[in-house]
Length: 340
Image (tube, rainbow, N blue to C red; front, side, top):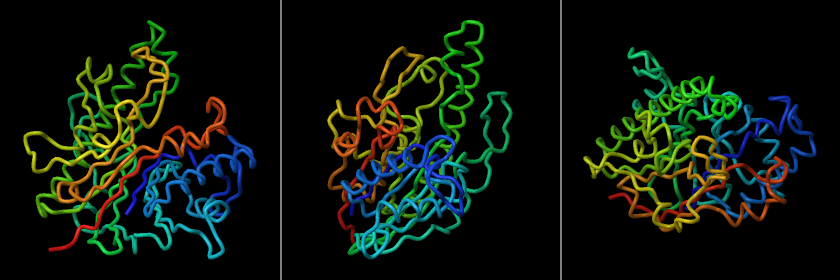
């Protein structure tokens, strides 16, 4: 069974009309939107996932259906059926099941621990030393899948709060206003940390109840290996480390399959200019899989789809129509864990 995760860069800008969708928006013409969609579909076809997890999906299911009808269909209709996340505004989470693939069914998880993720929790996200109610920027999409010939697997799709600060580079380079950027950047990172800790508490609950629990966590966590300026100097957290688990409870640590299957030089999913650390076109691993201890032995392979992605690049890829997304997809292949 192959699971692919992909941040598909503002799919919402491909469409207008919501429930009555049409191609194009204020950002992209209809032809430009179709070009982006065609490139994305080519990458998806090249990877042929049994389950496709998406971030930054369109705000309306009808818009996703327009994409599937136009670019991922055959004589029998759309090759994928989509399930949309409950919130996220113009950047929805989706899980897509491939028809005739190795996932027989997908259902939203409705157990008490999962439903509790909708409830606010106490956190100090603004650094004023006061605990206040906070909830996810985008509620994780949690589904239970029924693999053909295997036992059920829970998939958690997470897209944390973005680190983006509007006008951030100009603020950073202005000595008078740099502190404005630092304050805004720290607020974003504290929110990401809060979301990481809350998700990790949820995972601990699941594995404590069933040490053999079969769980895949994936998505764009807006953080990755290493420590950036704010983690080094302002003591914010590395969120990937939070989600994967503590070395003090090794039996609860989730495995990151990309680390053992991808060469270090290829271990990135996006490239962005880092104006804080002064690293242009910095390769970043922002998109992740975390596999529960009970499922980790069944990982057969994993990777980052550089070849499929780069096959759809035109020129530098700087313009939106020259690339399928600003992130590269990641994938993991699982065997068939059996019950008992």
